[in-house]
Image (cartoon, rainbow, N blue to C red; front, side, top):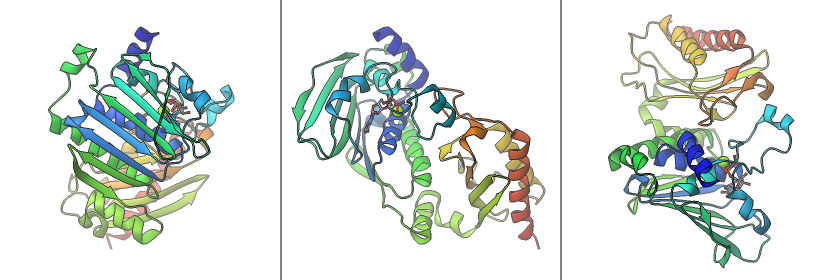
Length: 326
Ligand code: ADP
Ligand code: MG
């Protein structure tokens, strides 16, 4: 089992940022309103994610850290309509197999918390602990038992940069959730929960810069069962960066060729001087119209009707951008 978990870990857990992704997505799946991420030494030494979500009941604790246990799919049919971020049930055991791992959790209705430690894949018996309602997961010394992978970790700053970028990408879409991120004891981000257009705009400005906010177009258009909303940087924006391109499908950040092509085409027609447009876009569609189960890292998707999606994106963005040309 341990070897299997380590192999699975190789697929899903490449670097500290992949750990943070899995843990924070679990927190969001658990309905957290507040997620705190503490990182030391770029995540190689410590990653601690604390949330105020639903917690894990005592009986489910052993399951949560064993292979292919997920509480998120009850039947095969559900695979077709994955609404939560996690759905494979392999993240926690994978992470626990390549780190010194501890999970402490308390559902609101449970009198005290339980803490389980896993050292290199071997779970210790749960012990009572102090913890407010919610869950904290600590991952220390990532890859301490997989030297080949540890060797591939980049400089502390680089690894932390990826974590920060990941938190930004989650905070852009989960605007009602508070995020706090610290590195080596220093607060790096404090993103207060947004409740309306104005506070959402504050968050977008925090994450992408005031300039983006001021030099972007608000998009919101629905047709043929598809809805596209968000912000697209104007062709006149002086500073537009390739790394400020966020596209979400049903709340999930994706990299997709069809999407990229449609966006590029839409801009190409309004003379973007060959620069990379910055954008934050949210596409919503019937979950049956999109397959998210393509890769464990879950950033790829496959649209059932890719032509329809492509043309909808192209037309919506092109129409919006064309108006700015006048
Ligand atoms: P998945 O997210 O694919 O179900 P994971 O290995 O990431 O698999 O998590 C296993 C299970 O542990 C989840 O299905 C969930 O029930 C529970 N779990 C993990 N993290 C949390 C959390 N922060 N709060 C509540 N439950 C959690
Ligand atoms: Mg998960």
